[in-house]
Amino acid sequence: MIVLIPAYEPRPCLSALVAELLAADPELGVVVVDDGSGAEFSAEFARVSALGATVLHHHRNLGKGAALKSGIRHIRDEHPGQDVVTADADGQHTVRDILRLPDELRADAASGAPALVLGCRTFSGNVPWRSRIGNASARTVFRLAAGWSLSDTQTGLRGIPADLLAWVEAQPGDRFEFEQNVLLRARRAGVAAREVAIETVYLEGNASSHFRPVVDSLRVALPLIRFTGSSLLAFAVDTVALLVLVALTGWLIPAIVAARAISASVNFAVNRRVVFRAPSEGGMRGQAVRYAMLAIALLASNIVWIEGLTAIGIPLILAKIATEAVLFVTSYGVQRSFVFRSAELVSPAGARHSSRIASPTRMDADVISNGRNS
Image 1 (tube, rainbow, N blue to C red):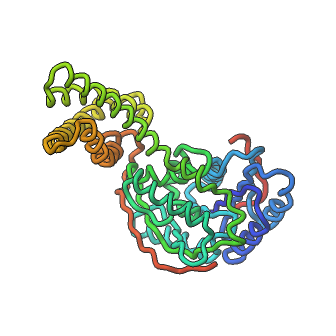
Image 2 (spheres, one colour):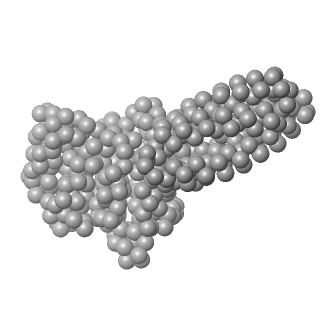
Image 3 (cartoon, rainbow, N blue to C red):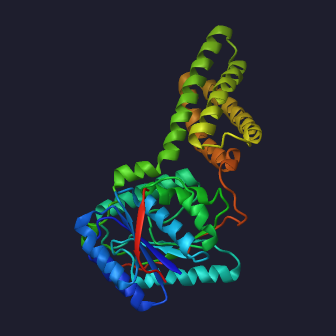
């Protein structure tokens, strides 16, 4: 079992954490990735190495995601078959909680149901405002983007079975969004995930955290933002076409059908290449068929809503806006989980997510390695 800790400009709590981990379990492997912290922090990494951990160095800051990928790649190369527990360097995870995850991973393996094990905080008690706001906004965005709920989307304490390391490493993103992409894509890839409760710990008001609530929440929201932009483009095309066709012909339903055919073609092309990023080779026919099925269903709903709203005296443009707003969330969820599902790597594991949160609280570039790894 290997504990992987990405670190950028760490405080002395990093070496203290490594010392406690190795004292609690001398057989544990610890890999720390210095993500370009600079000479000022070399003494802290030297202490970590002297304790017996392996230290990998990025020559410059590449981001937390890049650090995790470097660590996973090293572990896969040097310690194949080892499960990995990732933990943060800022003291937010207790040794007791970190050492719980290996037991959880072993229990899953014994039951024949390996899964990502997520150590989730409950955010009760004296939680710093930026962490409370950041986590609340991230949970909301995640629920909309992923289609399932997770109580702590920003947790860095994660247990990764050895069989999933290659899949995790392959996910896009080099900064905080990498961890979110793993979660956003897990269900579509058939990767199971479950929660275990951990303590909520903040040291010095969480001053050592490099998470930026606004910027990094926007990074997390990018899939939903791209879909919103695509939907607005399709809405504009659809609306203009509808108004023009109604003005030219005076026929409402044929105009709705023709306008939707035009806008759907634009929307499919943009969503396939930009939003869900389907591969350029293969799968397009199946995606087109599934998209057509969705488009027909949405068109039927569109007709029912617009006819009903205009029949009670609501102007056509307002009826159109209200209808599209109602269908927006449904369309995103169906496209993510059904239409473009082949854009994701599919594993044989059955997807599942279970929550069992209690309420404990308490306040790439070149890589150089040194140290030992057990």
